Image (cartoon, rainbow, N blue to C red; front, side):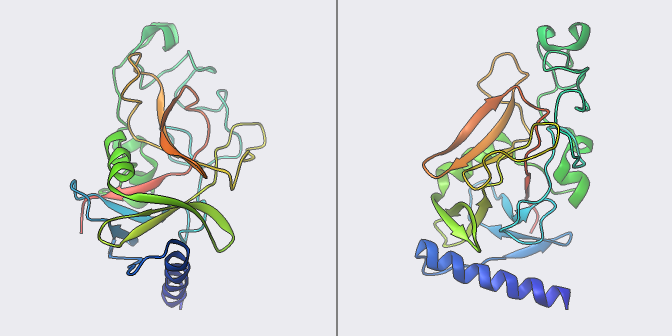
Length: 236
C-alpha cells in the first residue's frame, strides 16, 4: 500500500510538473537504486539525480537538514554544535587547507567529503553521494530551469533535453538556536560535497542556490548551517 501511494504521488507530481513547465514528455522516475528513485537527465557524466531530498518521501518535501560534513539532522545549527570545529569558523578540525582557519594551525588538505561524512552515502548507502561542484555545474549548464510551485511548494524545475526533469524545493537553510528556516519558499540552498573550487584558501563550503530569478554556485564560510542534500548516483 505504501509503494502504491508513493506511485500515485509521483504521478500527481508528474502532471503538476508538465502543467507548470509545458513539457511534452516527463518521466518522474527512471529507476530505483538501493530503495531510492532517480531520474536520468541524459547528462554527459552519466550522473543520475535522485527524485527527492535525503530525508524526504516526495519531491515537494524539503527533507532533512545537515551541516556540511555531518550525517544526522539536529535542532541547533551553529558553530558550537558543529562537528568539525572548536566553536568558530576559524577553528576547523577537519577539511581545512589553510592554517589561519584551522584549530591551532590545523590543516589536512581534504577538499571533498569522505563517504563516512557524506549525508547521502551514510543515509542512503554506498553509491549515493552529495553532488560535487562539477555535477552541480553540469546540472546548471545542461538543463533549462524555471521557478514554479508544486503542491503549494515553491522551487525550481530543471528540465533536460531528453524531456526528463527534477524539482528542487526552496527550503532555504538553518542557522540559529531554534533551527528555524529563514527564507523558505524564496530561496533553496543545497550542499556540494566539494569545497568551493574558486576559493584559494580551501576552507569555504560550496552551496547551490536557487531563487525565483537566479540559480548558481556560491561559497560560504558557514559550514555549520543546516541545508538539504539532493543525492546523486552513477548506477542504473
